[in-house]
Length: 87
Figure 1: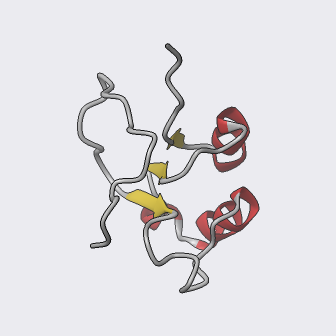
Figure 2: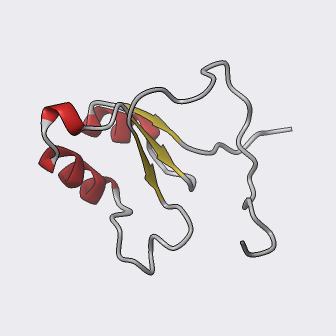
Figure 3: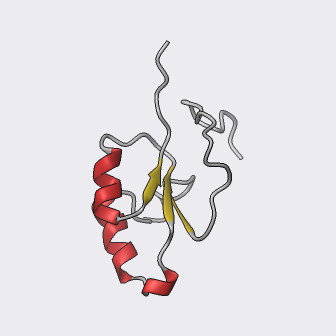
């Protein structure tokens, strides 16, 4: 793995604990080069192609996103992404 991994900012610890169920990971190293969906619209379209019993329970986005609530509303899923901590 390249030096400098993981990228800043560091994800804060949260009380949710480990992810349970099927998790779709978006924006992991190599995704852009492999042309794997990275936009909210691409991820939403992908999720909707999955049979109901194979859809993810949550999505983890490995980059900051501008509107997390819009992602969650569009996908109908919990969305986890890094945040910038003030202070």
